[in-house]
Amino acid sequence: KLIKMKKSILTLVASTFITGTILTSCSSPAQKVENAENNVMEANQDLDKANEKYLEDIETYRKESADKIAANDKSIAEFKTRIANEKKEAKADYENKIAKLEQKNSDMEKKMDNYQAEGNEKWESFKREFNHDMDELEQSLKDLTKNNVK
Image (tube, rainbow, N blue to C red; front, side, top):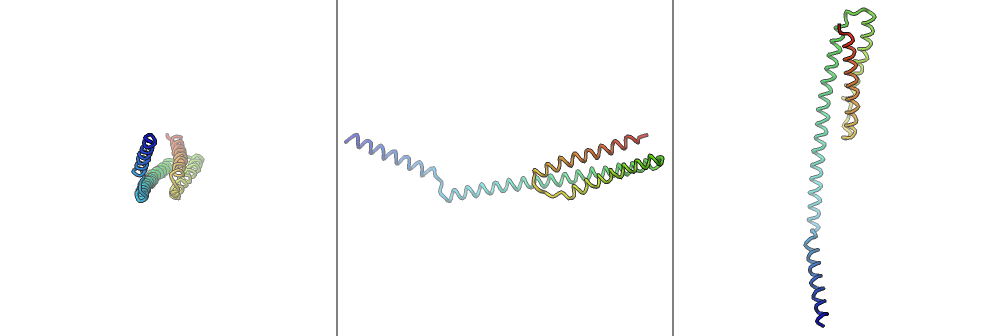
């Protein structure tokens, strides 16, 4: 009987301990809802910050691109002035090349103006392609003006 009684008491103590542990470790449904709401609020704040940073990046990049395009326009105008006294054949060749560069510069400006925010991944892809095209345009402009230096 004593052994049976010890087992019963031990079982009762163990059950009480386990039940107490479970009850104290579980959150109430209200706490779970509150924790979930807090997590959602934090996630929304992080998303808002990331979106704000993304839109700021687009705006900064637009300004930088506009500056580059304006600098290209200025270089083209200066080059046109320098070739004004060239021989007819050379002048026609330069004017043809300049017209192509002006068109490319104008296309780049339109491309930037028409860009719509579509998410960070597409933005990064757009920037890579735009930078590549802009670098090519700037290099073509430099090459053309170097060839005409007297």
